[in-house]
Amino acid sequence: MNDWMGDPGDVVIGSNHLTVVYGAEPALWNVSVSIPRRGITGVIGPNGAGKSTLIKAILGIVPKAAGECRVQDDSGTQLMGDAIGYVPQRSTVDWDFPTSVFDVVMMGTYGRLRWFQRPGKLQRQQTADALDFVGLSDLAGRQIGELSGGQQQRVFLARAFVQHPSVYLMDEPFAGVDAKTERNLFQILRRIADDGATIVMVHHDLMRVHDYFDNVVLLNRRLIDQGPTKTIFNSDNLESCYGVDAGFLTA
Amino acid sequence: MSFLELIGDHTVQVVVLGSMMVGAVSGALGCFAYLRGQSLVGDVVSHSALLGIVLAFWLFYLVTGQSSRSLLLLMPGALIAGLASLMLTRKLGTASRLKEDASLGVMLAIFFGTGMMLLRYLQRSRPPIPGRAGLDQYLFGMAAAMNTADIWMIGVVGTASIMLMMLAWSRLKIITFDPQFAMGMGLRANLHEVILLTLVVLGIIIGLQIAGVVLMVSLLVAPAAAARQWTHSLGKMVWLATAIGGVSAAMGGFISAAGKSLPTGPVIVLIVTAIFLGSLIVAPRRGLLSRWRQGDIHVT
Image (tube, rainbow over all chains, first blue to last red; front, side):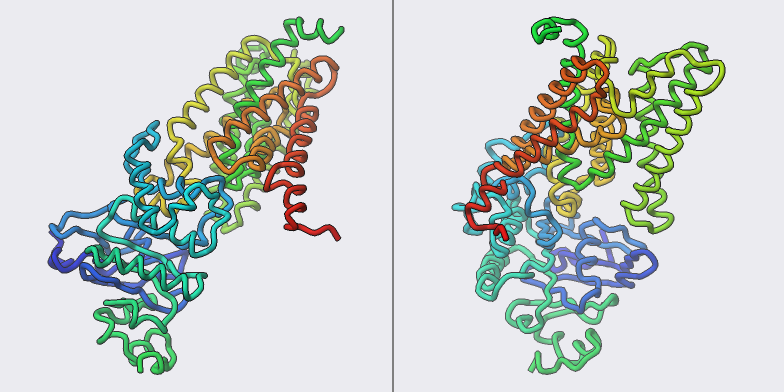
């Protein structure tokens, strides 16, 4: 058991004195977070605060210079790989890649395929269900380059959803979509969270923090504060996070 | 010789069959390199391979006193030189913070330059090494120099590379499309990087005898680029690139063998480039004509 992490019934993701370094610059410095089970947690901070890095360190994609992190289910068993639904930033892939909407969503099932194995009937059914959940069934055969930004984001959501993970890590899922699309996407996320999953997402826009998040992690290379949005998201904390007076946002 | 006589000629048959196999295999393997934006990597491997070929030829002569231009000897030399240049590129990049294309350019210059110097040295050395004149053919390719043993070598290496691609198909697809997600899913990035680079290296060295080190990269990349214009499915793209590469190389090999003294590389490159340009213009949806008709592009 991990004594630093806390009761698996309450805590789903934890990091312990986590430090990540790119080149000579620390991207994250001695960050210990504890993310509560269930609900939607926002990771908030200015550009270059290490928000994406935190997500990637939790997933094990970037090397840790010091410290540790862990994702656990409610019995304390460590979760890895496709047991975690990862939604990377939309801009990190080539949307001109020769593949269809259905194919991309089905990639969410590849983690369980063996060498030589191709997706079969089960994987196709899971893919169809996930597409239905995000409302993209009609576009299943489309080439991914023909989609709008919001549709591309829903494809990524469906790809994470396909294995029904209990934990989601999302990197700016609302980047580059219009307000109406953002509302639709958020409704999907709310449904996932209401079904009992935990969602952790990097978010940029401070205006919506109170509406969206049950909890927040305020980050600027170091951890500024964490906890329920109501108590943590205040002007003092925002000032130490952003270095400017942002009181108008929390009024 | 008439066309029919050429078709019946054993040498011509060997040349056409060998070229077709090379074109098909390189075309298939080139798809991942194309989609990952690694054309330059292929070019560095192919230019660097010259040093390995010349060194293998020379060492064999120094040790045995005989000379051999068999692929069984020269292909491993090319393979080692190609891999070495890629490893050194990576080392140079991490040690110096040079951008990847700059590191690649430096390695190409070093390996190809040394290879050319050694080639010229061997060709002028006294006493003359028997068979050394044939080394020149590796610059621009000479399909006519191919024999049955070479065909077997190409067949075995080609089949093994395609098997490797099939074995890892789903994983290669996802790591090419979205490496972040693939790693998050638990795929080991390093292992798959090695597999993908191995496919590039194999796709290059298999054709050096036919297309030559200078132009071989076009046989890796152009079929993929042409195929991409016609389809939105990776599977179909690979099949189409296989066909385009196979047909172009077979035609190039045939023309070169019929014309005797024509180097094969440039002939193949002209054919495959014509197919690529044609695809760029007439392909449905992505083609220039189709986009112009849809009002997507304007002629001013």
